[in-house]
Image (cartoon, rainbow over all chains, first blue to last red; front, side):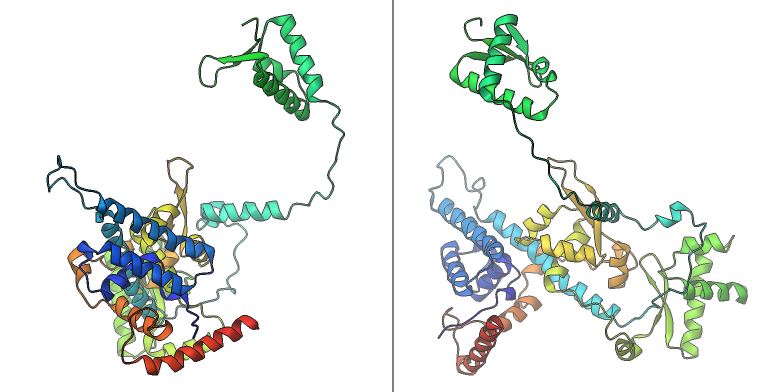
Length: 241
Length: 224
């Protein structure tokens, strides 16, 4: 018999872990990692998680459990005293408890939600017409950064769409630019990268020249030097260097 | 205090479209103090009690708001049938709790606590105006920081963030019989395959039929 199981009964891997700890009636500070890991795997197998995003979260937890298991198998260093030796499980336990703390308070929030839903304030104030002379400050009182971001996004989206794209022939080749570079270097001994790029008005020309430069460096025909981060780059012919 | 002043305050709270802060009342009624305003609100509530009235004034989200009493909730729910917002899911409540107590907080920190991706939930909470972007963290990538809104306080009937329920201490967390684990046990027994998972017990036979029909339902859902 096959069962289809809804994964959403567990909000995430921590829920499943807490459930397993409870089911096994073990002390949260002394989790039998090997057993729990095995059961955890059984569960996610049975849960048949199809959503990769969700599965990823659970698999990450398996990795954490395996890592802890491996660390627990390692012998304790003889130099470490008992006090110094940190239980590999500590971090996980702390995260579990932290999660549990918010999980529990979320139930209290749910109670508050139910309570408040019994009170109805007045709604719909459409009959109030806003005066024309409302100050910008007052008008923007409730506006958050996020509202502005959304407004900006909408403005961008409602911009007239450019439906054509111009394709131009690229009449420059890497070979041409390689020649050009070598010629320049023969004349000047050394060129600065900035100076080199400054003379190109078109982006494509700049790109092709850059590729040509990389090609020359790869072939070992030129050398490039830089004195510090963000400093200008000096380009020289190999034999001149 | 003059009756007139109390009536003005009543009118202001009645006509306000959002919880009316004490400062706003002070601005309108020059020379009045916060204590007097509170006294007026108490007086009004006392009058509503005596009448009796279906209304009362509550303090929420840093202001005063006139609301109907819980006794009439059922009728109003019928009035607002199609316009009532859905209750928040557990996923949303959990994430919202983390944001409320830890704000300002990045998505990454929320995910570290919940152990799951929070993109979808955060979007829903923003759409419902319960949280908002409050800034950016001064860290690599400058991730967005989230915090709760005034509407969050109103939604849960809180006066301010100080009004949030206290978080439990560790020893309290360790106590047995937690509400949510129990509810989880219940769901697990109902929805999962107990014998497959090694938590089989005497109730299986009863549960089996139910699980089977559930499975069938799901099959239909998928094919349709």
